[in-house]
Image 1 (cartoon, rainbow, N blue to C red):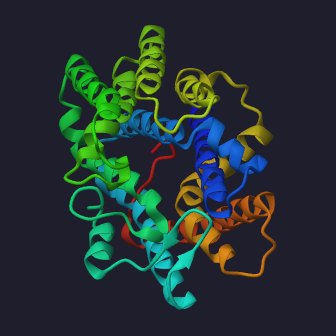
Image 2 (image 1 turned 90 degrees about the vertical axis):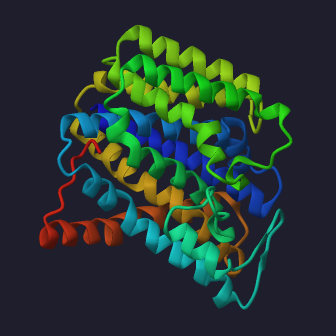
Amino acid sequence: MIWKSLGAIRFFLALIVACGHVGRILGGDSLVALFGFHFSAQAAVLGFLVISGFSIAASYFRQPKGYYMRRVLRIIPLYFFCVAVSIVIPILHGGPIKTAGDVFSTSDTRTILGNLLFLQGFLVQPISTNAVVWTLSIEVFFYVITPLLARLRPAWIALACLCSCVAYGGWRFLDLPFYGEVQYGAAVIFMGWAWLLGFWIYRMNINKDALFAALVAGICVIAFNGSFLGWLWPITWCLSIAGIGYGGVLPANRALAACFEIAGDASYSLYLVHMPCLLMLEVSSVPRSALLWIGIVVLVSVITDQVYDRRVKSFLRKHYRIGERRFS
């Protein structure tokens, strides 16, 4: 059940981010927006990273052969699709889309190409209409260097994690833009500690001392940084660590496992689809209800996963013999 539990937690984390953006686009203090604010999208992103580091370590150490191809199959088809949709929306609208909080316009060719190559945060800015993709460049960076990290002793990984923690804690004293807007890979330095922490937990065989250290370290450094936090953010972080340590102790109930699996499979879709979906709702005649909008976003994410992402992956596995482990 551990991988199904982690999948359900990833869906919860993606929902926090989506709800936060509903509030940002619609404005106001709806329950949906408050849910996203108080559980903290920032803590949710860090939760994503720590679970990703743990999952990637499991994927690589259990089956090093074909690791990069599994990564390509996992992220590329849906990512390219969502980037393409995000680019087209302002063009179909006939110009920039103005919302309560921001203006979303078409990115230039250099930015689009940079995002397709996962260079956002390194050489280009994230595309305006789906700015959440800034975190994908961090993920891909660590995907690429995982074979190198796998050769290091856990102590060296812990040291790298500590250095990144110091950078993240010190961000509040630096006159820098938001993490997604900094360049030259600075976001990896500031945010990478969470991914490395998950990788380190796996290398420490998920023992209780490692879990407790990760829990405390995360709470301390997030609280010290203090940015973009609602008052329920500790739940978001603690749930992410608890899922790694104790997700496998849940009873193997068939119905529960099926629900968790559907949610987990749709979590990546929800994270990438919600912004373009919200922008399409913004320019449509759909009633401006936060609860209705988030319901539509969740439905679209599940449909996108089931109808598009699953079928594309099935086609690639069948015709190009690309494998994918469930835990990856």
